[in-house]
Length: 312
Ligand code: GYE
Image (cartoon, rainbow, N blue to C red; front, side):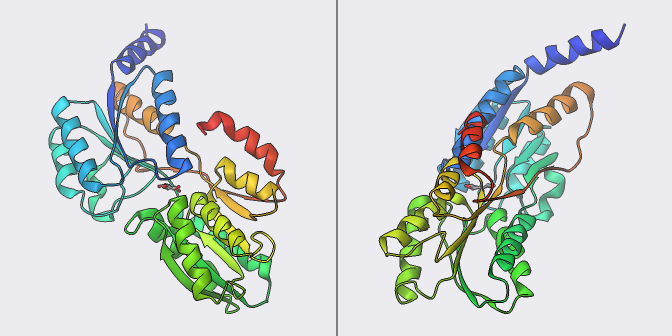
Protein backbone atom coordinates (compact mmCIF):
# COMPACT_ATOMS: atom_id res chain seq x y z
CA UNK A 1 0.00 0.00 0.00
CA UNK A 2 1.56 2.78 0.57
CA UNK A 3 3.79 4.94 -1.10
CA UNK A 4 1.41 5.38 -3.99
CA UNK A 5 -1.67 5.56 -1.81
CA UNK A 6 0.06 8.10 0.39
CA UNK A 7 1.02 10.14 -2.66
CA UNK A 8 -2.56 10.19 -3.85
CA UNK A 9 -3.78 11.22 -0.43
CA UNK A 10 -1.28 14.07 -0.35
CA UNK A 11 -2.32 15.52 -3.67
CA UNK A 12 -5.99 15.17 -2.88
CA UNK A 13 -5.48 17.11 0.32
CA UNK A 14 -3.33 19.73 -1.35
CA UNK A 15 -6.07 20.27 -3.90
CA UNK A 16 -8.41 21.24 -1.10
CA UNK A 17 -6.18 23.89 0.41
CA UNK A 18 -7.13 27.55 0.47
CA UNK A 19 -4.44 30.09 1.30
CA UNK A 20 -5.00 33.77 1.99
CA UNK A 21 -2.11 36.03 0.97
CA UNK A 22 -1.90 39.50 2.48
CA UNK A 23 0.25 41.25 -0.11
CA UNK A 24 1.74 44.70 0.50
CA UNK A 25 0.80 46.38 -2.77
CA UNK A 26 2.53 46.94 -6.08
CA UNK A 27 5.22 49.47 -5.19
CA UNK A 28 7.92 47.83 -7.32
CA UNK A 29 8.41 45.66 -10.38
CA UNK A 30 9.69 42.96 -8.07
CA UNK A 31 6.51 43.08 -5.97
CA UNK A 32 4.26 42.86 -9.05
CA UNK A 33 6.26 39.85 -10.26
CA UNK A 34 5.95 38.20 -6.85
CA UNK A 35 2.16 38.49 -7.08
CA UNK A 36 2.12 37.03 -10.60
CA UNK A 37 4.42 34.16 -9.62
CA UNK A 38 2.36 33.42 -6.50
CA UNK A 39 -0.78 32.90 -8.59
CA UNK A 40 1.07 30.61 -11.00
CA UNK A 41 2.70 28.57 -8.22
CA UNK A 42 -0.64 28.10 -6.44
CA UNK A 43 -2.30 26.97 -9.66
CA UNK A 44 0.48 24.42 -10.27
CA UNK A 45 -0.32 22.86 -6.91
CA UNK A 46 -4.11 23.12 -7.14
CA UNK A 47 -4.18 25.51 -4.20
CA UNK A 48 -6.81 28.24 -4.08
CA UNK A 49 -4.95 31.49 -3.41
CA UNK A 50 -6.86 34.56 -2.25
CA UNK A 51 -4.74 37.69 -2.58
CA UNK A 52 -5.57 40.88 -0.68
CA UNK A 53 -3.71 44.01 -1.85
CA UNK A 54 -3.06 46.28 1.16
CA UNK A 55 -2.03 49.37 -0.82
CA UNK A 56 1.05 49.72 1.41
CA UNK A 57 -1.00 50.02 4.59
CA UNK A 58 -0.46 47.81 7.64
CA UNK A 59 -4.02 48.45 8.84
CA UNK A 60 -5.31 46.95 5.56
CA UNK A 61 -3.06 43.94 6.07
CA UNK A 62 -4.42 43.44 9.59
CA UNK A 63 -8.00 43.66 8.25
CA UNK A 64 -7.19 41.16 5.49
CA UNK A 65 -5.71 38.69 7.99
CA UNK A 66 -8.79 38.98 10.23
CA UNK A 67 -11.00 38.35 7.21
CA UNK A 68 -8.91 35.28 6.24
CA UNK A 69 -9.30 33.98 9.79
CA UNK A 70 -13.07 34.53 9.64
CA UNK A 71 -13.21 32.64 6.33
CA UNK A 72 -11.34 29.74 7.89
CA UNK A 73 -8.54 29.52 5.33
CA UNK A 74 -6.01 26.70 5.74
CA UNK A 75 -3.00 29.02 5.89
CA UNK A 76 -2.07 32.68 5.68
CA UNK A 77 0.84 34.15 3.75
CA UNK A 78 1.95 37.55 4.97
CA UNK A 79 4.40 39.97 3.36
CA UNK A 80 4.70 42.34 6.33
CA UNK A 81 5.05 45.95 5.17
CA UNK A 82 6.79 46.88 8.44
CA UNK A 83 8.42 44.71 11.11
CA UNK A 84 6.40 45.71 14.19
CA UNK A 85 2.75 45.72 15.23
CA UNK A 86 1.75 42.18 14.28
CA UNK A 87 1.46 40.53 17.68
CA UNK A 88 -2.28 40.72 18.31
CA UNK A 89 -3.45 39.71 14.86
CA UNK A 90 -0.95 36.87 14.59
CA UNK A 91 -2.04 35.65 18.02
CA UNK A 92 -5.59 35.55 16.67
CA UNK A 93 -4.41 33.41 13.75
CA UNK A 94 -2.55 31.13 16.14
CA UNK A 95 -5.62 30.72 18.35
CA UNK A 96 -7.62 29.82 15.23
CA UNK A 97 -4.87 27.23 14.47
CA UNK A 98 -4.14 28.80 11.09
CA UNK A 99 -0.42 28.63 10.26
CA UNK A 100 1.19 31.84 9.01
CA UNK A 101 4.10 31.98 6.57
CA UNK A 102 6.04 35.22 6.16
CA UNK A 103 7.02 36.09 2.61
CA UNK A 104 9.98 38.29 1.67
CA UNK A 105 10.08 40.45 4.83
CA UNK A 106 10.50 39.64 8.50
CA UNK A 107 8.76 40.72 11.67
CA UNK A 108 10.50 41.54 14.94
CA UNK A 109 12.12 38.56 16.67
CA UNK A 110 9.60 38.89 19.54
CA UNK A 111 7.00 37.45 17.15
CA UNK A 112 9.03 34.32 16.34
CA UNK A 113 6.52 31.84 17.77
CA UNK A 114 3.61 33.48 15.94
CA UNK A 115 4.50 32.14 12.50
CA UNK A 116 5.44 28.75 11.09
CA UNK A 117 8.25 29.75 8.76
CA UNK A 118 9.60 32.69 6.77
CA UNK A 119 10.64 32.55 3.12
CA UNK A 120 13.08 35.42 2.70
CA UNK A 121 16.55 36.27 1.48
CA UNK A 122 19.30 37.32 3.87
CA UNK A 123 18.75 41.05 3.47
CA UNK A 124 21.72 42.06 5.65
CA UNK A 125 23.87 39.99 3.32
CA UNK A 126 22.35 41.72 0.26
CA UNK A 127 23.45 45.10 1.63
CA UNK A 128 26.87 43.70 2.40
CA UNK A 129 27.26 42.34 -1.15
CA UNK A 130 26.35 45.79 -2.51
CA UNK A 131 28.83 47.54 -0.19
CA UNK A 132 31.63 45.07 -0.91
CA UNK A 133 31.12 45.52 -4.64
CA UNK A 134 31.37 49.30 -4.29
CA UNK A 135 34.47 49.12 -2.09
CA UNK A 136 36.17 46.95 -4.71
CA UNK A 137 35.19 49.29 -7.52
CA UNK A 138 36.53 52.46 -5.94
CA UNK A 139 39.66 50.91 -4.47
CA UNK A 140 41.33 53.48 -2.23
CA UNK A 141 39.81 56.52 -3.94
CA UNK A 142 37.56 58.86 -1.97
CA UNK A 143 33.89 58.23 -2.72
CA UNK A 144 30.80 60.08 -1.50
CA UNK A 145 27.74 57.84 -1.53
CA UNK A 146 24.06 58.71 -1.39
CA UNK A 147 21.56 56.07 -0.28
CA UNK A 148 17.92 55.56 -1.20
CA UNK A 149 16.33 53.55 1.57
CA UNK A 150 13.29 51.31 1.32
CA UNK A 151 10.07 51.75 3.28
CA UNK A 152 10.68 53.07 6.78
CA UNK A 153 10.26 50.30 9.33
CA UNK A 154 10.44 47.47 6.77
CA UNK A 155 12.84 44.73 7.85
CA UNK A 156 14.49 44.74 4.43
CA UNK A 157 15.17 48.49 4.60
CA UNK A 158 16.73 48.24 8.07
CA UNK A 159 18.79 45.21 7.06
CA UNK A 160 19.96 46.41 3.66
CA UNK A 161 21.22 49.58 5.32
CA UNK A 162 22.92 47.63 8.08
CA UNK A 163 24.71 45.29 5.67
CA UNK A 164 25.93 48.14 3.50
CA UNK A 165 27.09 50.22 6.47
CA UNK A 166 29.02 47.22 7.78
CA UNK A 167 30.72 46.66 4.42
CA UNK A 168 31.89 50.27 4.03
CA UNK A 169 32.84 50.71 7.70
CA UNK A 170 36.32 49.33 7.02
CA UNK A 171 36.83 51.71 4.06
CA UNK A 172 37.26 55.23 5.43
CA UNK A 173 37.57 56.57 1.86
CA UNK A 174 33.88 55.72 1.33
CA UNK A 175 31.51 58.16 2.98
CA UNK A 176 27.75 57.95 3.19
CA UNK A 177 26.83 61.62 2.76
CA UNK A 178 23.05 61.41 2.39
CA UNK A 179 20.44 58.79 3.14
CA UNK A 180 16.68 59.02 2.83
CA UNK A 181 13.70 56.81 2.11
CA UNK A 182 12.31 56.52 -1.41
CA UNK A 183 9.65 54.04 -0.24
CA UNK A 184 10.77 51.41 -2.80
CA UNK A 185 9.08 53.31 -5.69
CA UNK A 186 10.46 54.74 -8.92
CA UNK A 187 8.74 58.09 -8.50
CA UNK A 188 10.00 58.60 -4.94
CA UNK A 189 13.47 57.40 -5.95
CA UNK A 190 13.57 60.06 -8.63
CA UNK A 191 12.22 62.77 -6.34
CA UNK A 192 14.69 62.05 -3.54
CA UNK A 193 17.60 61.79 -5.97
CA UNK A 194 16.68 65.21 -7.37
CA UNK A 195 16.89 66.65 -3.87
CA UNK A 196 20.25 64.90 -3.25
CA UNK A 197 21.63 66.37 -6.47
CA UNK A 198 20.50 69.84 -5.48
CA UNK A 199 21.91 69.52 -1.98
CA UNK A 200 25.21 68.26 -3.39
CA UNK A 201 25.74 71.31 -5.58
CA UNK A 202 24.49 69.79 -8.82
CA UNK A 203 25.71 66.31 -8.00
CA UNK A 204 29.33 66.51 -9.09
CA UNK A 205 30.44 65.45 -5.59
CA UNK A 206 28.39 62.24 -5.75
CA UNK A 207 30.54 59.22 -6.57
CA UNK A 208 27.95 56.47 -6.12
CA UNK A 209 24.28 55.75 -5.48
CA UNK A 210 23.15 52.79 -3.39
CA UNK A 211 19.41 52.02 -3.61
CA UNK A 212 17.58 49.39 -1.58
CA UNK A 213 15.77 48.35 -4.76
CA UNK A 214 16.14 48.65 -8.53
CA UNK A 215 12.95 50.63 -9.02
CA UNK A 216 14.25 53.52 -6.91
CA UNK A 217 17.53 53.29 -8.83
CA UNK A 218 15.72 53.53 -12.15
CA UNK A 219 14.06 56.71 -10.87
CA UNK A 220 17.43 57.98 -9.64
CA UNK A 221 19.05 57.27 -13.03
CA UNK A 222 16.37 59.40 -14.65
CA UNK A 223 17.04 62.23 -12.18
CA UNK A 224 20.79 62.04 -12.81
CA UNK A 225 20.35 62.13 -16.57
CA UNK A 226 18.05 65.12 -16.34
CA UNK A 227 20.68 66.88 -14.21
CA UNK A 228 23.33 66.22 -16.85
CA UNK A 229 25.14 63.54 -14.83
CA UNK A 230 26.27 60.24 -16.29
CA UNK A 231 24.99 57.34 -14.17
CA UNK A 232 26.94 54.14 -14.71
CA UNK A 233 29.99 56.16 -15.73
CA UNK A 234 30.60 59.25 -13.54
CA UNK A 235 28.28 57.99 -10.84
CA UNK A 236 28.41 54.31 -9.88
CA UNK A 237 25.13 52.53 -9.15
CA UNK A 238 24.37 49.46 -7.08
CA UNK A 239 20.90 48.27 -6.10
CA UNK A 240 18.91 45.14 -5.25
CA UNK A 241 16.22 42.91 -6.89
CA UNK A 242 17.49 42.29 -10.44
CA UNK A 243 14.30 43.41 -12.20
CA UNK A 244 14.47 43.33 -16.02
CA UNK A 245 14.66 47.13 -16.39
CA UNK A 246 17.90 47.39 -14.45
CA UNK A 247 19.53 45.03 -16.98
CA UNK A 248 18.33 47.30 -19.77
CA UNK A 249 19.97 50.19 -17.93
CA UNK A 250 23.17 48.15 -17.55
CA UNK A 251 23.15 47.32 -21.25
CA UNK A 252 22.79 51.06 -21.96
CA UNK A 253 25.79 51.76 -19.70
CA UNK A 254 23.65 53.64 -17.17
CA UNK A 255 23.76 51.18 -14.25
CA UNK A 256 26.55 49.05 -12.83
CA UNK A 257 25.36 46.34 -10.46
CA UNK A 258 22.38 44.67 -8.80
CA UNK A 259 21.88 41.89 -6.25
CA UNK A 260 19.34 39.33 -7.42
CA UNK A 261 16.28 38.37 -5.41
CA UNK A 262 13.85 35.75 -6.70
CA UNK A 263 10.20 36.81 -6.92
CA UNK A 264 9.28 33.16 -6.31
CA UNK A 265 8.75 33.16 -2.55
CA UNK A 266 5.33 31.49 -2.81
CA UNK A 267 6.63 28.25 -4.37
CA UNK A 268 8.72 27.20 -1.35
CA UNK A 269 6.03 28.59 0.99
CA UNK A 270 3.32 26.46 -0.64
CA UNK A 271 5.50 23.36 -0.53
CA UNK A 272 6.11 23.95 3.17
CA UNK A 273 2.40 24.40 3.90
CA UNK A 274 1.35 21.34 1.87
CA UNK A 275 3.91 19.20 3.68
CA UNK A 276 2.82 20.61 7.02
CA UNK A 277 -0.88 20.05 6.40
CA UNK A 278 -0.68 16.70 4.63
CA UNK A 279 2.29 15.08 6.37
CA UNK A 280 2.49 16.97 9.64
CA UNK A 281 6.02 18.04 8.78
CA UNK A 282 7.25 21.22 10.42
CA UNK A 283 9.46 23.25 8.08
CA UNK A 284 12.66 24.98 9.21
CA UNK A 285 11.99 28.40 10.74
CA UNK A 286 13.75 30.11 7.85
CA UNK A 287 13.63 29.10 4.19
CA UNK A 288 16.38 31.20 2.68
CA UNK A 289 16.50 32.27 -0.97
CA UNK A 290 19.77 33.08 -2.79
CA UNK A 291 21.40 36.45 -3.38
CA UNK A 292 23.64 36.78 -6.42
CA UNK A 293 25.49 39.80 -7.72
CA UNK A 294 25.11 40.81 -11.37
CA UNK A 295 27.17 43.52 -13.03
CA UNK A 296 27.16 45.15 -16.45
CA UNK A 297 29.82 42.58 -17.43
CA UNK A 298 27.31 39.71 -17.13
CA UNK A 299 25.60 39.98 -20.53
CA UNK A 300 22.72 42.10 -19.24
CA UNK A 301 20.46 41.69 -22.28
CA UNK A 302 20.69 37.91 -21.98
CA UNK A 303 19.67 38.12 -18.32
CA UNK A 304 16.91 40.56 -19.29
CA UNK A 305 15.46 37.96 -21.68
CA UNK A 306 15.74 35.16 -19.14
CA UNK A 307 13.73 37.15 -16.60
CA UNK A 308 10.58 37.01 -18.72
CA UNK A 309 9.51 33.64 -17.36
CA UNK A 310 9.79 34.82 -13.77
CA UNK A 311 6.58 36.81 -13.55
CA UNK A 312 8.02 40.01 -14.97
O1 GYE B 1 13.23 44.23 -2.69
C1 GYE B 1 11.36 45.62 -3.11
C2 GYE B 1 9.96 45.46 -2.68
O2 GYE B 1 10.34 43.00 0.51
C3 GYE B 1 12.12 41.94 -0.57
O3 GYE B 1 10.06 44.93 -1.38
C4 GYE B 1 10.96 42.85 -0.71
C5 GYE B 1 11.26 44.22 -1.28
C6 GYE B 1 11.85 44.28 -2.67
O4 GYE B 1 9.14 46.47 -2.89
O5 GYE B 1 11.48 45.88 -4.46
